[in-house]
Amino acid sequence: MKKFLLTIFLTFFITQSAMAIDWKFWVSDDEKSVRNLLESQVKYANRTNYEKFISTYSSDYVNADGFNLDTYSSLVKDIWSTYNKIKYDIDIKKVTIDNNIATVELEETANAQIKMSKVYEGELKSFSNTVYKLKKVNGKWKVFYDSILDETTSMLYGDARDLDIKLTVPNTIPANSEYSAILEFEPPTGTIAIASLAADKVEYPQGQTKEVFRTLPEDNILERLFTANNDRVNEYIVASIGLTKTEFSDVNINLSLTGFGYAIKRVNVTPMEEEKISANGEANVQNR
Image 1 (cartoon, rainbow, N blue to C red):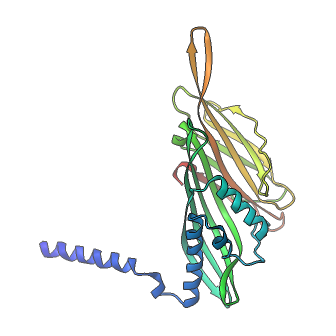
Image 2 (cartoon, rainbow, N blue to C red):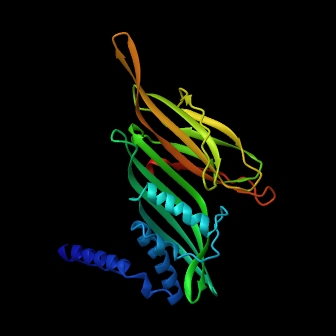
Image 3 (cartoon, helix red, strand yellow):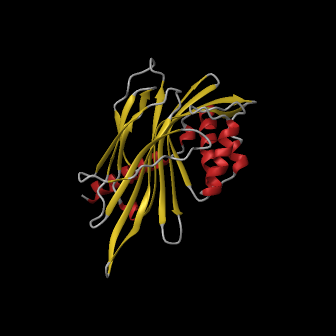
């Protein structure tokens, strides 16, 4: 029995060691360079090294939202000036190289502890599935295009951090088509919850979200219908949430804010003739 257990242990150790072997031994030089380039992006982003980070993009870069390198650079500066302690990570799923064009499928995550004030501490969480395209520029791989297939982001403060939030929207929708957004969460006992659902175009600078708050229905589900824009501009569905408690003092009734935040999900808008509405994609914001 001891020998058998030792064999299992050695097998497990060898397997783990093999899994830990650097992927660089098993891929082409071009794939090594592509992977290294994308991993360097993560390193530069975590250090908020703007110059190095932007240098990984080609000068003719444009993404699926229509942002060129100048616009994207301004966006990066704004994000890092506001949230400079975001932890970024990627998980590369697939690399395909055809001549001098590389296509990379990967998952991206971003997490941060954030504060609205000394009273309200919060968390930022973001998850996306993204496709990157790279090409060789003067012998070096550079990103010239990327497209976010799906994206879920949450910024939750106070008691809202403990909510199990589900925001359900279609991942893609033909332009000028109607679609629904459904928000579900169970507020803490003794708490009054208000929420709103709004649609914003993905643009920079971002416009102010038009919020119309409503008391969360008894079934804890808020639904709203939207019509996708006809400009083939991708959209964000923004769910805004507020939690309040009632406090009684003599004859006075006071409402105190105990938590608030946002759950945001991307809806990619396609030309009407290009594709049909995809099946609704449900995301559990809390567990991303």
